[in-house]
Image (cartoon, rainbow, N blue to C red):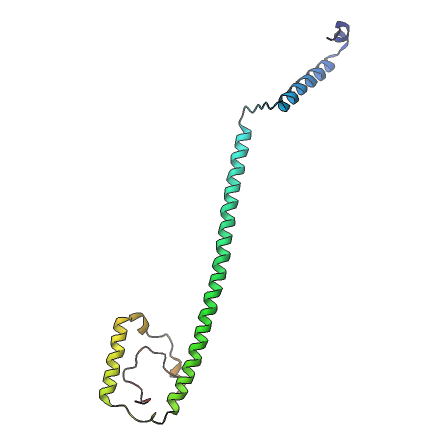
Length: 161
């Protein structure tokens, strides 16, 4: 215990310092013992905010991951489509050259065969109408040696029997 003479010697400023020191010691000892005092719920608010930020960050990371996967898949499909277009152009060029240089390329087709081929074309267009949509521009219009990109010719070409 503090002697009375020592208490009388303390000034008002000394009393304030002593009270602050005692309160601080009690708070530190209480915290060390695991006591928490949060009358305004600030800790719970901070925890809730941190959880929300974590969930948003997780969702954004997942979205970026999905975007990266989609870009890779799109690049793969684009490369596959490009390769198919190159292969188709090569095969078409070979077939067109063979058709133009065939020994019977100038021989007209029998009208019955022309009608039969036209009927087959119309039936194919009926079964798969999306394949028979007319293209926007026909490259064969400007090049006499190009094959028509149109869906179905009105009459079969005279390319052989």
